[in-house]
Length: 109
Image (cartoon, rainbow, N blue to C red):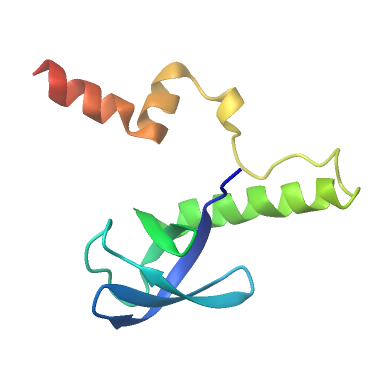
């Protein structure tokens, strides 16, 4: 399983960014997201930024990863998430979350 880690851009290098997140720093490839700016948030998989995200989305992903870590450690399995889980979203909200709604509208126009 590959898990995306939200990371905030600290510094830029050609084709890369030095980012911080989840207690560490990494040099991240930015070819798939274009040139970020310091302060931007990226969703990083295997040292490659796959998506630009908002600070709010980064906080949601971090909260989800915290819940997952707690469950794996045998703690907090009964805690409620501090955000709406995808399983509780409407079909329209899921499409918006995944970007499929935007893509569907582009292909039908």
